[in-house]
Image: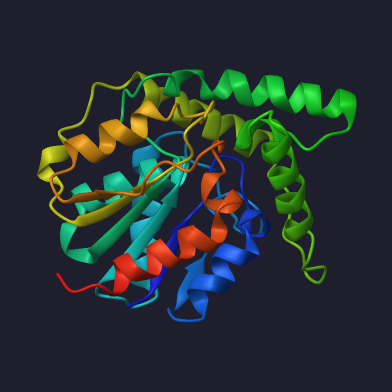
Length: 251
């Protein structure tokens, strides 16, 4: 059963932590892809989560898969929820990390936080993911710098950075998701693993608890301590072990 990875806001293929991808890929087939209009993918970037979900479904079907598992991170978690809701027979199990439901607390502020961090990062020559994905503590900063080093390990055939027009479209999509009426998550009957850090400033961690409470067949990974939006990267060893155990466990 392949595991399809659904990427976060502004992310391309090189933004997945190799420790997470490689760790899972030792035991499972893992497939990552660029969203439409991002990186190596052509076309116009959708400005709604629903359109992104339709793209993901088309991608999976084009590969000839009748059923897959999904790992959605942040914006990718929004997409995974729509795919599971609209195409339930295409999905077996879902992992939702650093994400939240439509209309979740603080999600509509993600675009503003992203822009602020990007501008600040440009001024101080710092990757904005350091402040957006990790806490301001000593351990958080250390974990963030280690993560950024891992992202540079592969040097050949690097993916293209997201364009400004594509980023704007994704920001609109995330803002719309944050302002939508709450979804009826009780209709999603897949087994779902929910994970995050305990101090996510992008998609506030309370959304993780909300998801776990509202999804009827969810399993909550205890929130990673002193960790933010990139909690699954900071605690990659623990996350990979939890993900594999969840994916391989009997129903």
